[in-house]
Length: 322
Image (cartoon, rainbow, N blue to C red):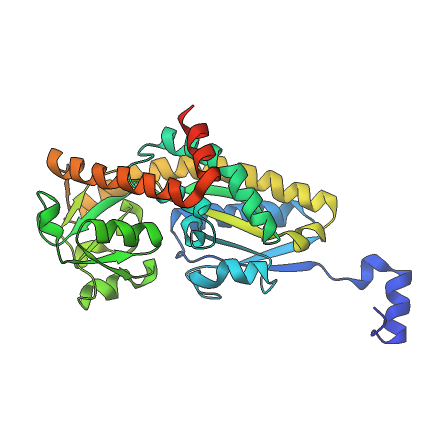
């Protein structure tokens, strides 16, 4: 404050509440308006803005319109923005702990995904704390399935095809299945398929609907391979700078958003799978052989993940299996 003009400094000392304006928080998310994650976050923001009074006002910036997905965590960490949403496994290169929810066939239902999240959460919070970040809430995508242009009977039918990857685990999955991984953001899926950059992807029915996959694909195999989660994080210093009452508003709204988001994800699975069918996508149950081949890859990847995560990984998996 010693660098402030004398008059401003005097006003700040005399009227501290008037000297500092309402905190204006920009909130970037990678996902488009109307996506169920985006709608859940919009409701979270509305809750906070309605109840936090003059302490803070949050503005949502969807669809990578403010900050690219790959830069959201670092932007929150460095204080460029105070809050943001990203895919949890985006941070797997920083710590293997962030990648366990995207290990194929480790958790293949909502009940299993919730158990895995409870086992993973304390390790996530510890890792985020070291970066000056706080976890607010985390919500899963619908189970991941396989989108293709041609029928797939077994894993050999995928050999040599280009595969849309979006994190370390999907790169490994593609390589183990004999495919060629190519990093593609969700917002770039239609262009990537239309221009031939990728031929196959594994993602949720929700992302399939967002991307209007019926314009460039034909088949969707319900593999239920894993339920990757997004998370909302906040810069700890920005959070601590708010009055205690505003902090409670945010944590209460986050708890409500987490519960609402898990329920919305289940409904999203049903709704978007029906929309895929309605728009001409063939929703197919994978063959037993294809499921067995992918499950074998999943077991290999689980073991590799545990080795990379060391003692923490072993403790996490033990907690999950209890």
